[in-house]
Length: 417
Ligand SMILES: C[N+](C)(C)CCCC[C@H](N)C(=O)O
Ligand SMILES: O=C(O)CCC(=O)C(=O)O
Ligand SMILES: [Fe+2]
Image 1 (cartoon, rainbow, N blue to C red):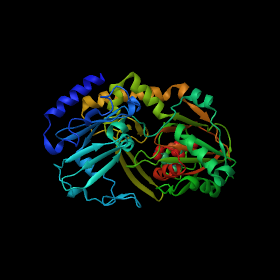
Image 2 (tube, rainbow, N blue to C red):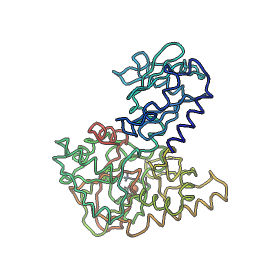
Image 3 (cartoon, rainbow, N blue to C red):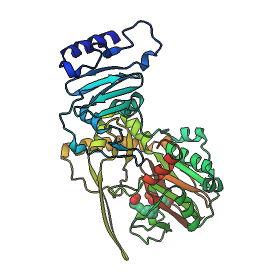
Image 4 (cartoon, rainbow, N blue to C red):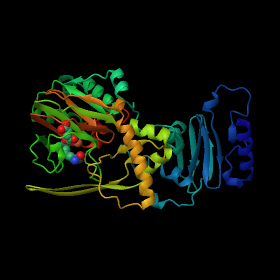
């Protein structure tokens, strides 16, 4: 296979234009190491390259990369093109000739050297290219996660983090964030049951996202707002603020008081359910990623007048690796569907039904009773929440957090987020 590849490369190279495009050393550089029988470089760390009419083909560390010439010029890390102090590009990309082509190419064990027509030299570490090329990215997940049903989550015995260690130590914070990133939910224990203490806990990992519900919200079943959340009724699984163009990233819940029965919280890993759809009905999964929908919040109660509209598909994936990053699922707040024709609508309803069936499997439901002192953080882009109907007086406080800032905190602690 490798040999055939080599033959192919040589043939291609033979037909590429002469002279300056040929790297110094004549016919040698295609597969410097492999051409010899004995070598010390492991097979996977040999580098082979070929200059094509419109791109550079490079094989290194089991990755075959196709690199566009403008891309190669644009990402130059030389001092005149890139400011390493600010990690910002200084090169004006618009000044690069779209037909640019390197006039010389050379590779040593660890580095690719490109000389451009104006004499400028660009160097790339081969490892850097593997990590940063499209082909390298494609092999990686952006966000490592453990998808769960109730059994998997219980078996994992994910510990709650104690409030003091969470607030006062990096280790406590890191442990909490690691759990949160992997499972999409995490608990902090022994929080004083007040709104103020909940706010301090929330601010440890992010910025509070102020919304139409306020900064820190605090609610009982008084219907002070025009939404079912402010009643004693059961709420089926859903994600919140689907009617924002960017739904809130994280939801914090802290139950400050409950004198009565019921009111347990339901948690369902939306990505686990979506993954089942992908496995068993890939066409339906795809439809759920493609059909744009509106969600809407219309409120006219007391002094509260709001009209929010958010647009996007139920399942949102990165197009280059099909990895899920956001589920919008709220059957209460889903608006009139007027973004697709009737036949697509019908197939969409079928796909939505398949997803709903997965989300409703009893084995996927994690039920918890929130108690004063135990703050729950939910990844609102992944994990759905719901609530059992309740009786008596119940007070819940919490807030939404900006997602970017949670991930920022996690990355600063060395986590992959
Ligand atoms: C009470 N709290 C502010 C947390 C939520 C209110 C939002 C409820 C809305 N139906 C939604 O799902 O977005
Ligand atoms: O009352 C609850 O436990 C949660 C209600 C809810 O879904 C929400 O506030 O977003
Ligand atoms: Fe909710």
